[in-house]
Image (cartoon, rainbow, N blue to C red):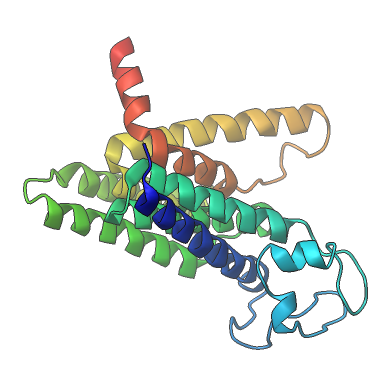
Length: 263
């Protein structure tokens, strides 16, 4: 049962999550286009109209402007609104799942980062290194925070997950590059796999890779059957890994318990 303080903290998580998600919209647009995150100021992508403060309020500005630029009246992608709303929702869910803790704060930010990573890789087949480094830093903060709170915390499975996945998938990356002169996995995918191992431990990271691969394969088969893509056409792996990663942040222990019960 939530008391008044829980509600206040939950609202703060939602507001901060929406603001982080609004900034992630900047990352999603600018990082793949190799633009500065500082200049120019926020502007309409169609007419370059610089947004005033009241056109830059997350969620409310989009609704107030009816999803159109004030200057050129062209539609603004609904992705901006959806990302901001999801940022608030994910942050609230992180608080409800983990409470006001290192895990809760790290989870809220990580979920928004993973959403940005998935969208960028889906649109541009690229995972910006800066986002990977930030996600890695959050995984380290989570691990160190848990060790500080609980000195007997078993951190070894997390280090095993990170080291094993990094070594294995780096090998899987370099073998095709050296012998076939083409990439299998991208380096961005390799880094994301290893971060999953560090964040969730080796078992949770393995489930991320397993289910992400299955989902990606199913979607690829469907698209090939529908002749939307060819068999040779590459697909970004990041969106599916990011999606499963986000789910596992909440339900990793439940999945592992369920799988263990079947053995």
